[in-house]
Length: 75
Image 1: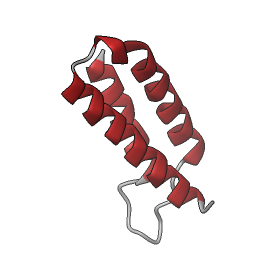
Image 2: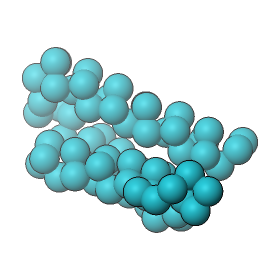
Image 3: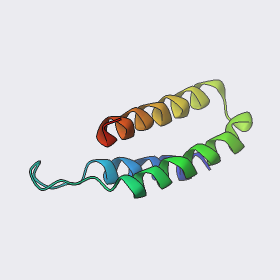
Image 4: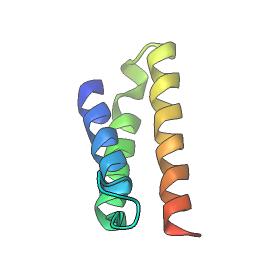
């Protein structure tokens, strides 16, 4: 299940940072928000079954994604 969360996090990152020139890059904030929310919910459900190191890494990854989202959103 942690692979699913990592895949969702990668998708959210891709939505926030499209692989185009900076002038053309327009983040898909709605899709990024959905991917982050689904990853966070999945993490919430499986976190009791994870080791402390993996739980900490995933929590940090989700926090970083949320900060990136807020920065891109401009709020």
